[in-house]
Length: 596
Ligand code: ATP
Ligand code: MG
Image 1 (cartoon, rainbow, N blue to C red):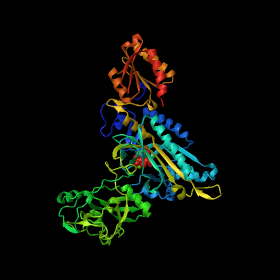
Image 2: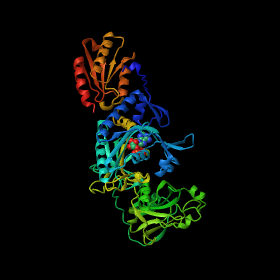
Image 3: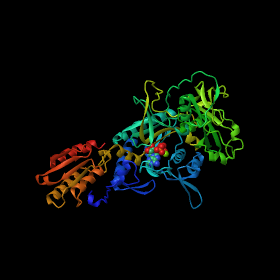
Image 4: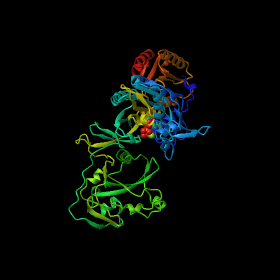
């Protein structure tokens, strides 16, 4: 391709709305164009990158025995109503774009495809003899993200590879899950991406295995907790750990103490020389249930610990069968709107009376009381007395009327010990989630009544897995890991072109002639070449070539008359003056070997 014909417009300045370097570089080098918030056009160079990633993905996913398919993006609401997801995906903070057709029928625009694929499996797979089946597709997904940002990292229309597998038993699902795990590792490494597989939250489905693949990068939105020997890694949402030991409370009797203006743990500690680990703090959240119920939660946590909201949602589902679609801390305004008197915030105790909720307009009028294990394990502690300006010291659970439901709802923190090996401490790194594999079990097949006939003639729900890769996010994650101050450094395997030939002075006939000859020769050798034939200064061309990130650059300059060129490697920035034929030989052996 000739750069003069390429619609190439590069920007010298950093676009104001692009916060992270990979997003800035994609915009500056003319790979993408923003259309509106979270919606981008992939320009021709970008499409080549995406297509290369797609071919790597296809090769590896086909090798697992999966079949490529293409599912509709418009999905009838009825299917989502059957799985109970229509409301949570469309109401409030739900992320599904949705509409009505001319007959008034509701449709959602696909954020994911479990409902559609399970319905197809139900209608197509009748016997155990047809199983297992793995189907996948590569297509645009639509999600009305609350905070679209960072370009292709979190966009509202993006490209995903999603695969779904159907099995007659859990063991077989486990085998495919392992195959996908291996395929994913190959895909990411072939794309030049360094990833860490981490234990992931399985959402409210519970129990089932789920693993995310995180591209390590400072700009990543996810926090990963990782043990010193790297044997354990988990998304912070899911991570478990052994917390630091609490500082024992010196002996003493239960007594009420005056704590004016000490409504925070910090104030309480500095005024009384307490350690945060000796205190139990109490927080109130509202859990919005799937059926619309609003349940106040009275949560007790050791004073030095932080709450993990994802764990609360999972606990409510797994231990109490409550499906939560939203969880938020209560505010004074809401208490007033409920017609209730103010709560003694800052002085709440785990035994706060239910009478505070009596007469609430829409809230249930009994607290659901839960406490983190770190809080319930304390024998003696300091806590609020439910009276302004007063706390209680040397309180015990007995005196509070017993231990509430004790669960793990704390955030694992840096410095905690690893639960699998207590010689290891946890530290944190940031990551970009580029893929997710998930054993769904029978959640969707049960709710959509997707069954097959088993060996003994009985009807059974399919065992299912799902496996996603964010193709467009992955492309940008590669840049986040592979760039320098001059621009992108594509790995050969997914570079839009492999070589760029820059003719230093297009007015010089020798240079132009040699450039053109080289261009044609390299194309004949099956190499993907750009010819920068623009009537621009050499410096401009070099800057653009750096920015675009093409792995090799051939500079045809003054030495052309001696049949010599300069070969420049983008990643090492090494330049070698070479005889043309030697350069061709080197490139035609090196490039194909590095393609994947
Ligand atoms: P996240 O937690 O980042 O929102 P998710 O858990 O919602 O991701 P999945 O539903 O598992 O993601 O989707 C599969 C893959 O699609 C993700 O691993 C990610 O790489 C990609 N992806 C998800 N949401 C977006 C988005 N808004 N923009 C770009 N890629 C996305
Ligand atoms: Mg998401």
